[in-house]
Image (cartoon, rainbow, N blue to C red; front, side):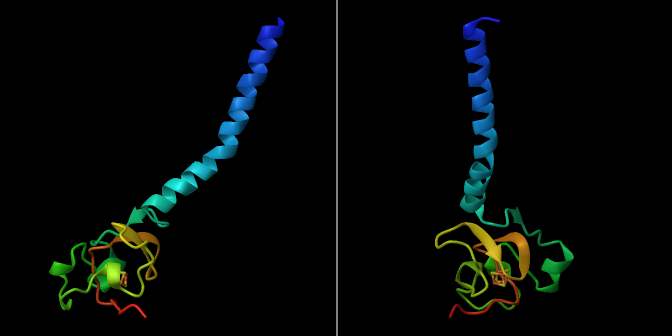
Length: 107
Ligand code: SF4
């Protein structure tokens, strides 16, 4: 085994270790860009139906004009986000433009 092969193997192993070490950071960064939950709530699922969740507030039955997930007190997405976590759907995201019967004003 030559010196260059040994160095090459060391470099490969070093790069592999670095990749393994940095992958969780990359996944975290990606997760924060789309919202902590990641998976969007499906309006057809039972929990969503129970609160009449819709992805577009203009179709919300009983929604007051201007109310939507983005200005709901239970919305945890960043300002200006397209979607984000909601306290009533742990681990999932809702559309910022969405709405449900649990809408509450921000304090
Ligand atoms: S509780 Fe608020 S943020 Fe969550 S789905 Fe209902 S309106 Fe949207």
